[in-house]
Length: 187
Image 1 (cartoon, rainbow, N blue to C red):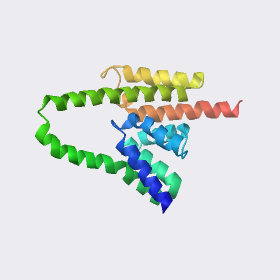
Image 2 (cartoon, one colour; image 1 turned 135 degrees about the vertical axis):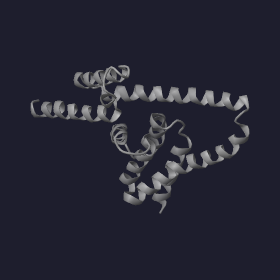
Image 3 (cartoon, helix red, strand yellow; image 1 turned 180 degrees about the vertical axis):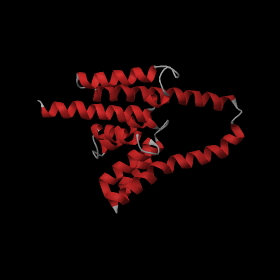
Image 4 (cartoon, one colour; image 1 turned 120 degrees about the vertical axis):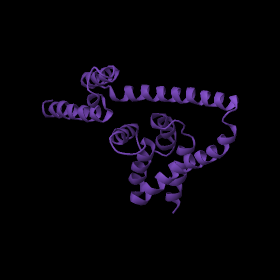
C-alpha cells in the first residue's frame, strides 16, 4: 500500500509543479522521477514521449500512465494518471471560479504574461536536453535536420499531410528503423 501511495503522491507533485504541459513537464519529471526516485531514465522518458506523440491524449497523462504501469502494473498506471491529473483539474476548476470575477484586471493579464515566459524558458531547456540526448551520430542529425526543415516550410508549399506531426514521426521512425537496423546488421 505504501508503494502505491508513494506513486500517487509523486505524480501529484509532478502535476502540481508542471505548467504548460507537453515538453515543459520534462524538468519536473527529471527531478521527481529520475533523480529523486530513480524509477526511469531520461532515455525511457524520450521513448515514452515518442510514443505519446503518436497516441491520443496529453503527453503528461500518457507519460504518467506509462511510468505508473512500469512501476506497479495497471493499478500503478491508474494511480499515476490520477495523481498527475488531480492538481491540474483542481486548479482549472478554481481558476474558472475565480477568473470569471477577476479576468478583466490588468494584474491578472500581467501574471499570465509572466507565466507564459517561464513556460517558454522551460520548453527551450527541454528542447536543448532532448537534442543533446538524441543527436548522437550523423544519421540522427540528418533525420533531425530534414524533419526540422520540413516543419519550417510554409503551409501551401507542401501538402499539409506531409507536415503533420504524426506523419513526420512515423516517417522518421521508418527511416530510423531502416538505417539503424542496417547498421546493426553491418557493423
